[in-house]
Length: 345
Image 1 (cartoon, rainbow, N blue to C red):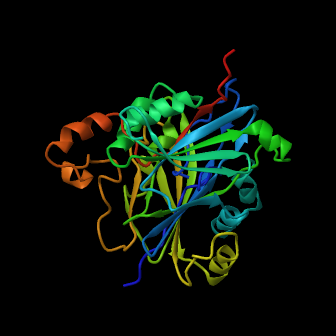
Image 2 (tube, one colour; image 1 turned 90 degrees about the horizontal axis):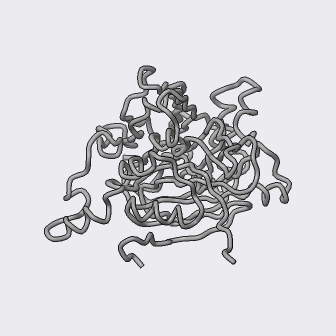
Image 3 (tube, rainbow, N blue to C red; image 1 turned 135 degrees about the vertical axis):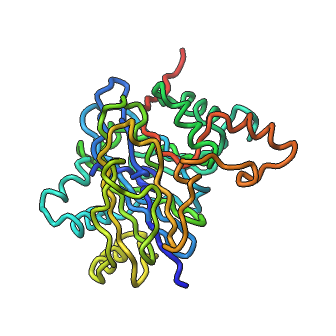
């Protein structure tokens, strides 16, 4: 049987959350509180056991530096700059209104220490792939100038039980301005992740928001065949399946010609899921069965907790695992404020 492909939000870091992921993204808060994250657009693609996560973010107002923490389902084999127009092309395919294009880019494993697995510089972004438990990731974030909102420990714990891999992206707006990037421009990031099935973090989008605040995002899935989704995108849960059909040859050819998109197959199924929900509604993630024939994982959807066996924990390792994963990390997309550390005199 043909393996499915899925392209996940991974932009600002292999994913850049673009205004228009999961994974992607809550509220961006700068040192002066003036930076706002706008609508997010993400592409999650899955093919031959590899998830491709592409996204970008758009910001409005503010200067200086800020960033985001994003949960991942596994350790990336590559983090690179994404294509320049892949997300815009997807929007044009499903939203033929001229205004739609404008919406996309206006914008040692010692206890207590997160392990830095990879560090990459992409334009004005400093990207770090981290491994650790929720407490370790939170400590690393604070030590590197991220200002975490009050609900961060709970959200990190939600993800930590499923995956200890996060991607931190520090965006320097001043450096972006020096490069000629304008407010509203985004930096696309492409993350390549080997994983049994694709997954899109959604709860992270509500990080730092009050229950009534709105979360808006567009998630594109590109799989070999029509995928099975959990939860099902129905309006009561703040999700709507707006597009679900075989991708056109023209779209696939266009995507394949963009930077780093050579992996795009000759045929695929394109799905678009629009998120328009209150922060309190997004208490789950989007789990996907790319084969289209099974039931997506309730653990990946955040509806059930993983068992010790699923975590690969047995015997005496259980107590240690409970200690080191108690705050959780996982596949989350954490958008938070970042400010440069000041030198002490």
